[in-house]
Length: 251
Ligand SMILES: C[S@@+](CC[C@H](N)C(=O)[O-])C[C@H]1O[C@@H](n2cnc3c(N)ncnc32)[C@H](O)[C@@H]1O
Image 1 (cartoon, rainbow, N blue to C red):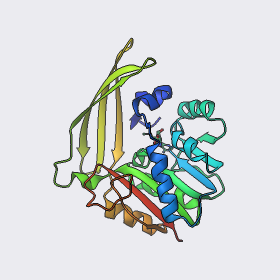
Image 2: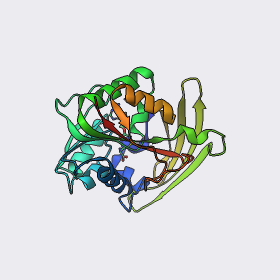
Image 3: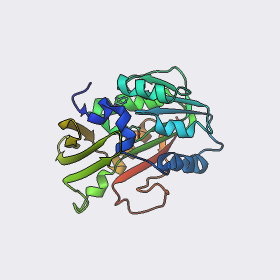
Image 4: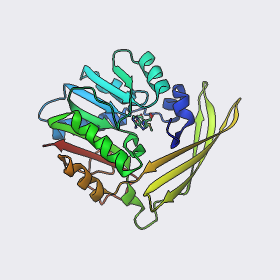
């Protein structure tokens, strides 16, 4: 595993959805909003790069049977396959994977694209998007919004997370720091887990600014169709902490 991903929840994927519940199917609902806004007809195929437990893909597969997911971590994919055997799931690296086909939608949600830390990683990941796109393919990215930190008032150097379920009871304390030269954000997190004591994990994320991302995408033929800091896809001044980006492939 890359040293930048030492996440307790990735090693224990059965707890991922308990720690990050999505009770109202928010992410797939936002994807559906993008499908109706940016595609001429509902997608017939979807590829999720960095799919994790494939929760989003599972929901979208109700309307689109040809759903594929790729994740770096074999243990996450092993868990997802058992839970969701109707999906095409495989382990692979978004920087290199080639499935030798194209999709109507490519998505990379929950910050998965931010694991491309270096310019080389970013370029390779973008090439993977290109390799699986045809004219009109809708690419959807869900990442941190680096622009929300401009002005400084939105950055919180620590955060707390509490999970209280019969299967998993834990508290996590996170400390965030920037490497401004590399344009990365690091998170050191200490879990206090019932029955296990303390466990530490560490993640590092590449930060992208809206105009920078638009440039990177347009260089590869993806025309950015909007940039939103909310899942309702309303126009704002992008001060919110997330960035949701639909882009259409027009090579
Ligand atoms: C925060 S999780 C998000 C999972 C899922 N997209 C979601 O929103 O629920 C990020 C995922 O990206 C995966 N990932 C990180 N780097 C990757 C790479 N180079 N190729 C494929 N998957 C990657 C991690 O293994 C992890 O499962």
